[in-house]
Length: 380
Ligand code: ACO
Image (cartoon, rainbow, N blue to C red; front, side, top):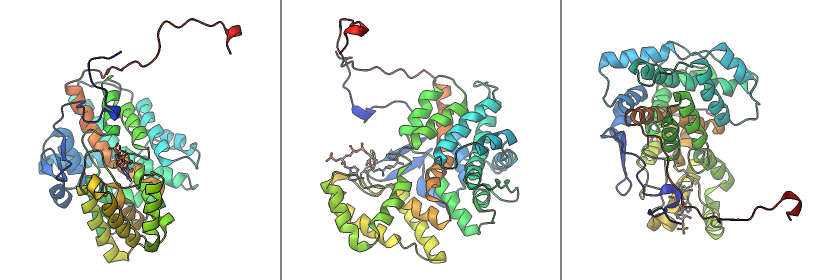
């Protein structure tokens, strides 16, 4: 039975929406947010400025940005009851699962829903951008039996997150590098988690359910979970002498090498280029990560083997090395991705609401018809 359309596994190449939020040219390695190249935004803008640009389709004026930052600063704290709920999470649970649960729980505490009101959209944007980092940092401390660290009002968005992780004020260069990482991960066209957010948004549910869907989708190792896997892989390889044999083994076993390959990019991901620069900047100031040489050798060997197939380092390949140098535990790498991507998900949520039609694709049925019903006692 056919539906008249060609079936494409993974919907590869099928437009699922029209969007003006971001653009990727996978052959040339170009990424733009609202038409502005990622290299320029990474150098010149803060993450919150980029979030504003993505969501409201304009770079904020000085006063708009100050108001936005101040509103977010005023909403960073989470309710005691949310903290109490998080205290009951198992300490062995993955932080992405903790984040998905806490993000969904916000819908219980902020149950007003007025999707057609700009003030409701603004408040939801502020609340989610403000509270998601606090929830990630709180779970990280609570799972070790510590009390969460309250947000520090004298610190900006990125610095405050690093502070809530350790209770130490980060150096300015650390905050700046982390802020740039957030910008790099803020948005990336129609990927799995964004699609998941949009499908959920199209039912006109609340934005917290939208974020929870997206977080759950980002958690998988083929999507946001790969950056955590990259560090595990580098540790497993251990030294540059083992790189070639590791790659040969992966080829023989048809096993994918984490941090390489992308559905869209057929050259090195432009975000990987910037992240590698940030890693080197950090290593210069604080000493090199012992696995950086392994990563460089791996990139060389994978490029030689797979470059012709268009498989190059993706965004996840160098981000883990940066995060580890910033003192972030490896199972928080994907939650960091989520903290940043909330900006893009919110932009798509808002865009979807403006043109909404519930997602209802079709399927090609491959089962049988007119089967006889077999009574229970006759079944084999
Ligand atoms: N290592 C080795 N071979 C690879 C890799 C890799 N990392 N990625 C793709 N290939 C090969 C596949 O084996 C396949 O080969 P074949 O044609 O001989 O069968 C071919 O390239 C196409 O691969 P697909 O998986 O079909 O490509 P797809 O576009 O579906 O996958 C994906 C993209 C999922 C990212 C894939 O490259 C992958 O699994 N990479 C490793 C995980 C990873 O790093 N994920 C993070 C992606 S970035 C992000 O989500 C934020």
